[in-house]
Image (cartoon, rainbow, N blue to C red; front, side, top):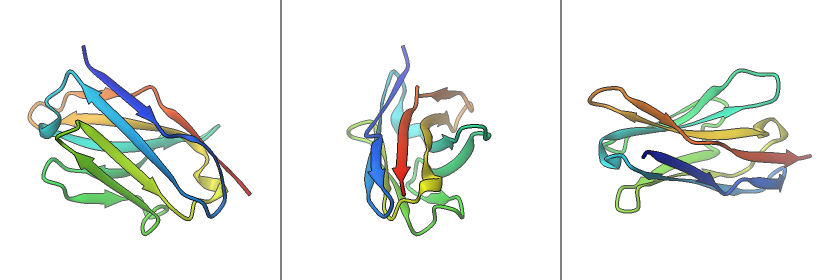
Length: 117
């Protein structure tokens, strides 16, 4: 079955760094667009970053120049490198795999990121 397993979350001080990972299994990783989303308490889930199958990337304005999304197709893993984190980055972070041929999507269970001021 399909599994997306996020890891790397935790507690970090403002200004610090964190790297999230999302390991995928049960899908053809290379034909999936990979996304990172986040959801803060009381807020809607928002798209943070996207990396296409070909490697092109897009970011939300709020994280541009601070977060970097990347993928390793050999390891079926997508990463989110977070630097200069802020308290407003506190949220549960989810990865999503989107098959670009048939648009099927799968979600991970999420990993908590808490940034202290």
